[in-house]
Length: 313
Image (cartoon, rainbow, N blue to C red; front, side):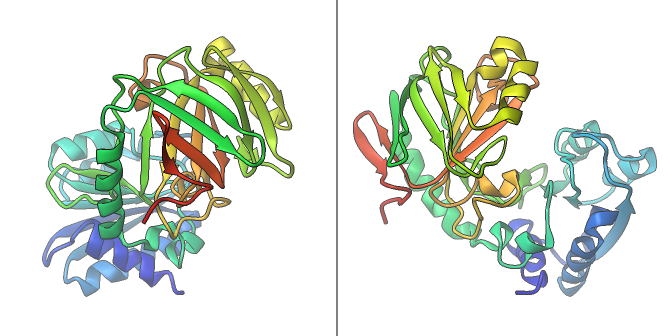
């Protein structure tokens, strides 16, 4: 499929770009083709697109050049198509306060634009998110099992499940990250117990399943993922904290793609070690180690939510 499919999805369904609106597309040099496709889609919508090409950002949340930050304040719609995320920059925050509708596409690839997670039907994902929200309301305990050896539990009592990852930014001041489609929560600190087996990723893509034990909410005895261990250790004890649990709901997302896409893949279990504050928890830590497993079964308070990676229809 051509990358125009993803561009049209972003412009039409996700951002609902209207005739005459100023659409600022910020792409780095490695994603010039993506930026150009979104530019042409905005033209077809009879908007006024502005395409800017910037050098690759060298770190997450690196601010754009000052003239570009000022331009962001003047546009109704902004698309951030860069390798590293600009979602948490002050420039983005100020543009949001000024009323811009913003879609951030950190790590976007031409593959994800042409049949990958970005091309999903976000109306359908929104419907599934609403169903999940009802099922997860007042949840207290999560259990994860798998044929590969996973068997772990943790508490989510009084924790808010985040069910707003819809992919839409249609109103003034709304922001979305694409591809979208994940429901997630910060487990209660010091409650995680058991064994986790990651068959797709633990920090890096794994050739053989990586395993770890959970003891009072912290990862111990990690096997098969040396880089993950090194990154966790960088944050000390808190770098091993069970920080996030999520379930992917995007049928177009690929579990072996970039992590921003892999975590949204339909039926994928996504677990983060390190800081939990961004997800509603209490642990502040700049370490983030992502784990992805597929074909897992998830139970909520003893009731099946997902069986072997399949959600009920």
